[in-house]
Image 1 (cartoon, rainbow, N blue to C red):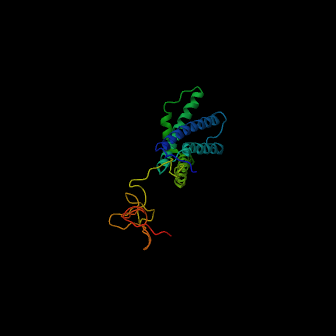
Image 2: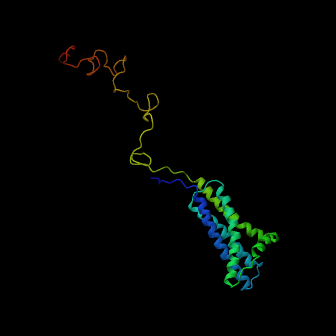
Image 3: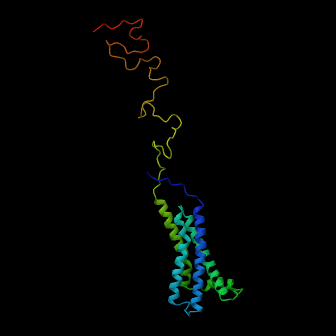
Length: 236
């Protein structure tokens, strides 16, 4: 017996991306705090291979966090991948800013007033690898969202579970308008005319006996044996 699958809500993918975007923002902020700690406290080169690998891993995790909640929904169409890109970019920017402000507060310092302006002016000086990191999260998020859309589109549509008498979803389903029964000549069972199986006016009674045999009882116009108007059959 197949299980009944309810229709998905149209707003469920959007809510899932909201949750994923918030989680990705928090993850990016945490990775940024650790990044600043490794640079200022551990003496790591911010452009060295160790932190490059670290930043790449953090970006992939952030992009996956954006679209991860979509696995619990059934998105359709290109809207979900497009929104995943938008939420990934927002999580990337706000995560960096929250991480920087959070690290400064942890060090007992007040963030500089011009930090926000300096952050956005730094886009004009991005290297190729910096742009790669910035775009990697939206790419990962869009790829996972598109994969989920493809999985939903290829999944077979399941019918509601059949009831005890074969009616989908319940024990009894009334026939559609018109009776739902096949008419004569339509390739189905015969539907008796109104009034039973008697002959229509002006037509002979159906299934009359062969010539020379007594008529069937209760035939129109024919009295039953023992009634006036008909001779009894001779004894055998």
